[in-house]
Image (tube, helix red, strand yellow):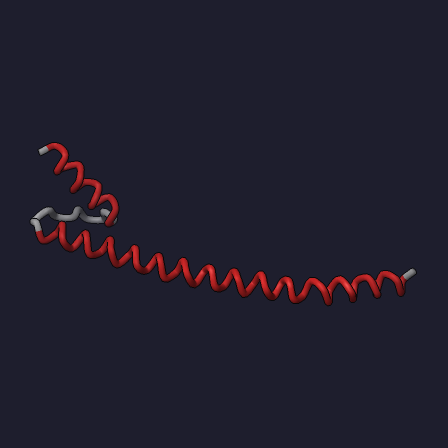
Length: 79
């Protein structure tokens, strides 16, 4: 009985290990892709905030970039 359990465990581990390695490889590739995309978005947001700042619209202390852009767009809607 114990030998059957060890044999089943061994066969299962031999089958599952390559599958797990494949899943981990896909996960790492996917995370790398999103990291590059995130960096690209961050650079675009920084470019937009720089362009807004050049218009003379000042950023408040402790205001994040998205709030700054949203406040700028809202101020332009009112005009």
